[in-house]
Length: 130
Image (cartoon, rainbow, N blue to C red; front, side, top):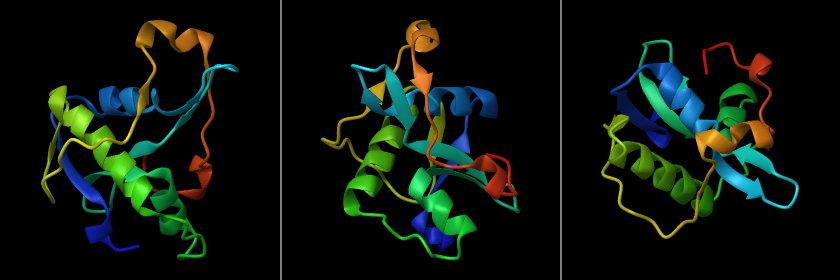
């Protein structure tokens, strides 16, 4: 995957705040109260920060063996980044993002303990800090 495919950002708060917030945004199974986070904060070797869809993380670790990214994934990533920008958590560096009609579920922090957060990416397979 090329860097130009990732959404570069300036983080305006502590990285932990971004990571915790992204941990509560994604696809939800409301009946079973399971949340599947869609995006993560990725830091490259040059300390540049990116908001990446979890499928982009697969591309970083598997030499493009898994390339199921689609336009909806990019729209969802951009919709999540748009929210983070509007909440004053990040500035988007690489492109202008617009409000998208792509639905994203945001789990309120007060309800986090009642939900299971299930990651689709195994973080041990990525050397960089996510």
